[in-house]
Amino acid sequence: MNTFFTAFLDNLPQVLSGLGVTAESTVLGALVAGVLAFVLGLMAGHRNIVVRGVSRTVVEFFRGTSLYVQLFWLYFALPLLTGYQLSALFCGVVAFGLNFGAYGSEVVRGGISAVPRAQWEAAVALNLSPYQRMRRVILPQALAQMIPSFTNLLIQLLKATPLLWLISAADLMTVIQQLRDRTGESLVAYLTLLVFYFVLAYVLTLLMNLLERAAKARLGEHTGTRGLLRSRSAAAAESVPVVPGGAS
Amino acid sequence: MNGSKFDWGAARDVLPLLLHGFLTTLLATVLGTLVAAVLGLVIAIARRAPSRLVTAPVRAVMEFVRSTPLLVQLVGAAAVFSSVDPLVIGIVVLGIHYATYTSEVYRAGIDAVPRGQWEACRALSMSPRRTWQAVVLPQAVRNVLPALGNYAISMFKETPFLAVITVEEIVFEARKYGSDHFAYTEAFTLAGLIFLVASYPTSLLMRKLEKRLGH
Image (cartoon, rainbow over all chains, first blue to last red; front, side, top):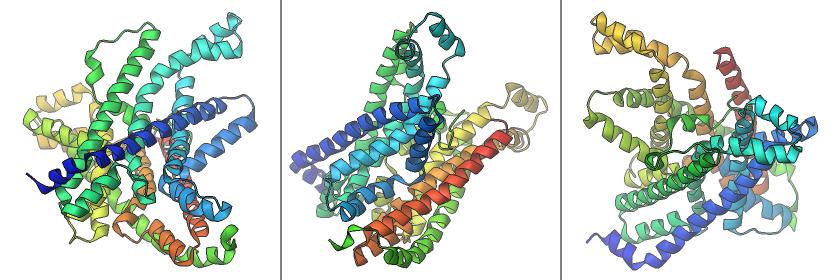
């Protein structure tokens, strides 16, 4: 048997722990990003121009500076300013959260503004409070539309996690590279690593498809089980806005 | 602690190095975008090939490249092809990775060409080559430009990955200066600002272009 796979099986606990770090940073990063996306996205639709301005500035700042630079700044530069060293995993979660939260806020903003005006007017006519209007009428409809774009961002986040290797968190990439260094089999090692990420991405896509189905079912649109196995749609890949102001 | 505030002297020292690295960043972005633009079109056309023997493998490879991290692809390619110049590897890998995105843009453009146009070509008994060249592509590619520009901006923000395979671009210079002079704060703050200053106006420009083309 191939020496790489022998080493792989011998060091299975380390591989699994690396996989754990990758999964943990993806999930925690996505949670921070999700919360931030909704806060910034709702702020972007606020009446007050100051609130909108703050949201716009934060979003443009974190989208405009590279994620890589942000991560390095948190890990290397911030401790020199404050004298307090944050753990690598914590830096990763914060940087992923801020960066993808900024991108996600555009998805939230777009999803909310895509809900037909009549829905808002109907909610006002029924004398719903602004909170009830958002919670009961607008968000359930907007959410179903946002999920495909969120799926894409989630995969992007997963694809960003190997950056943790550069700030010496023992993620999947770090562990597999250690095995490569020991066996010298670059091609097999990196292909294995790519397959790992591919499978993780597919699993995340399936989970998000389930979520989308549930969100649509709440609106009374029932979709079949066939669509669950589909990979990410091309249209959604383009709807991740890169331009300030986003897809409008 | 000595390094506890922003040192303007260090900032002045590091700026020329960063700007020099920025040229490499720019070069990688421009050439990478070129590869992505050409290869993306090839993939988009291959995916409309009549035989499933062509479309199925192309689709599978595309899905795989699109779903796996650029960083792993870069480091893996650099390790396997260790005799090739890292900048060339960087440009090719960036180009291939982004070609999987741009091919979707082209595909949408091609799908938007009305069926009647294809049928008219057949009625005029035009060769497939001429159908693509004279009828389909001129209509499909026109509206693709802003999307390509947006991907160029995303690629620009991912070029720091090239530092990992020792291409001496902006983040590479920042890391080097940071570790040599223990001045990470100044180096990374300026590197971040350069990215912001370069990418924000370009994004605004792309938005204008999109509006002009009526998106």
